[in-house]
Every structure is written in C-alpha cells, then in structure tokens.
Amino acid sequence: MRIKTNIFIPEKIKVGFQKRDNTYTKKLAYVIYFDQKGKLRKETSWNGWRDKSIQDLDFANQPTSGFVLNKKVGDYVSHWNHRQAYVRVYDPRDFEFEITVENLLFILENTNSIKGKGLEGDFIYGWDGKELVLIPTSSPDYIELSQFNKLIHEKKHVKSKDLVFGGTYKTKDNDEWIYMGRFDYHTTKWNRSEKQGESGYYTDVNKGKHYFFAKESKNYEGKAYLQLLKLKSLGDKFIDIVSTDPVENYAAMFELLECMTEYSPYDKTKDEYVQYTLETLINKVQSEKYWGWSVYLERSENGTARIKKSNNDDGKYVIIVQERIKDNGYWGSVHYHNRDKTIFEGTLTEIYTHYKPMFRDKYLVNGKLYQKGE
Image (cartoon, rainbow, N blue to C red; front, side, top):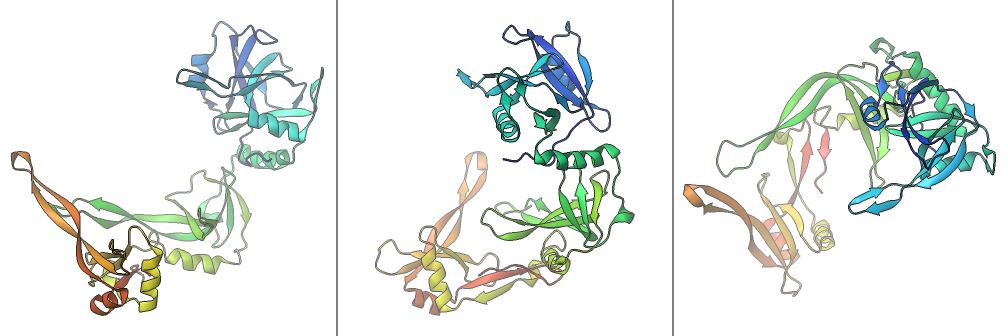
C-alpha cells in the first residue's frame, strides 16, 4: 500500500482543542497547518470546532517519536448521519487527534505498534487535500515526499524562458507534464437557434495563446489518449525542471495534438461521407442489437437514420428516421418533439442496394482527421 506522492508536509502546524472525557488527556485536538505561503489552512472550520477557552498551540512539524494508538471511534449510523471510522492517536506533545483507518493500515505496513510503548519510529504530519495523514519516516514514500515538499517550500517556479519543446516539468501537485508549445487554445460555445423549433449549434471560441502541456494516459477502456493541460500563464503551477531533453515520443505526441479540437477547431465543411461496404454494414448492424446502428442516408448532418432488426423476427431489418412533430400548446405556444418513423423494411442487402448507407469522417481546420465515423 502506498500513499499519494503529492501530500503536502507543512513546516508548521497549529492545534486547537475540545474537552473530551474519553481521551488520555481529557481533550481532543484538531490539527491544521500553515501552507508554503504562510497562510493558515482550514482556519474557519477549525475556529468553529475548537473550544476557545483552551489555549491553542503551534508546533514545528518535525519528525517526532512517541506516538501511541488509542482506540477506534465512529463507524456508526444515527438516523441519516453516518460517522466514518477513525482511530485516535496520542501525540507525545500531550494531545490526541484522529486519523483514518486507511492511514492506520499504511502506518502498520511500515512500522510496529508495541504494547505499552506505542508506535516505533518517527512520524510527521502531512495533508492529502483536506485529510490529515500521519506519515512514518521509515516508509519508502517519505523520501520522495520530502524531496517534493522541499521544492514547494523553496518557492521556486518554472518560468517561460525555462521551457523547452519536449521537456518534462513537475507541478506543485507532483505531476509531470511534457511541454508541447504555445498555441491558440480553441473551445466551443453553445448558441441557441433564433428559429423556433430548430436546435442550437456550437461555434468556435479562440481563447488566445496558451501554454500546452501533455502526457499520455489511458481511458476507462484502457485505450491510450493524450491528456492536455492548457495555461494562459504559468504562475506558480510548475516547481521543477525534471529534464530539458525532449522525450523520445515528442513527435508522435505532437501528431496526436494536431488531431485535437483544442489545437485546431472542427470544420464541418470538410466532412466526408463514405459509403459502407456491404460486409462492414452487416457486421456493424448485427453488433448493435437494441438501439440499432446509426448511418447517414444523405450527405448531410441531418441525414441520419438507424438500422435495426425488425420486430417481426423474420430476418429482415428496418430503417428508422426521426420525424419532427409540431404540437400546439396552451395559450398559443408551440412545442416540437421527435418520434420514430419506419421508412423501409427488408434484408440488409436490399437496404444497402437501395439506400447506400454512409458514415461521416470529421476533419479539423488544419485538415487533420478528427473523428473516424466507421
């Protein structure tokens, strides 16, 4: 079990208290921290929780020994409220606080808990987002986390003059990105149609010059794709130069970038409508048993239809199109809805011969194939 490598380890922590009879010290602590800019994080919720009659304390967040496990708390349901399970831990600076069960399992994988003596070794506080994490310095992750946090606390940031095409750079989230270049960043805007009953449409929006960074990732199906990070300015996003040597696959990554709408917008005037082969059409239609396979019967984005097996179960198939119906509502209002309309029934060979079904390939302004329709 490993913990995240982007956990923040502050240089200073602040501790507030509530009176609790079921603790060693008769008080429970809520620990928060100062970030690398000296700002106290989670201060509002901390102030709302703590007993202000008990003096809060500041500590340097340095490796410390003498932590002791107390007991599990939470993990119950009261009406609609579920209290997540936590584990109480005694800090040798004379207060108790709570960690998650997952944090405890990580600790026990990397050190021992000795009865009467507590946890072996030194520990330090860290934060995974809003969640406090107690980190044993004996864990392999600690060395990597220490190096990462050293960069954060040095407050050094990568500047535009440091960027090299294909170079690798580390963010303050401990992610590594490849610099692709500075280009116009394109996105889209939805426009409502001014004509009643007609659907809206998208138009291109040029957001101006952005720094493009990328890394190869995989989607839920395990297919590779290019993940993008677009920044108007670098700010303090990057904290380290991993390497200025261009990655070996930079050219291949750039080819993928050229086929993305963020780099070059979609141009529907370049659409190509390509007729299916009979063999491909049969395979596609038979693979989609429920909704039916979508095709184009005309060389127009509105020329869509579905081909699906006939309900008669006689080996025949039907072509279904969407028919737009106008309804007159109350007070003279007009509404539209779509309904299925069957325009042909026959074998797939007959459908292929009479209608010549097509798929649509989409291209970008730069001429690169954006979406294969087949």
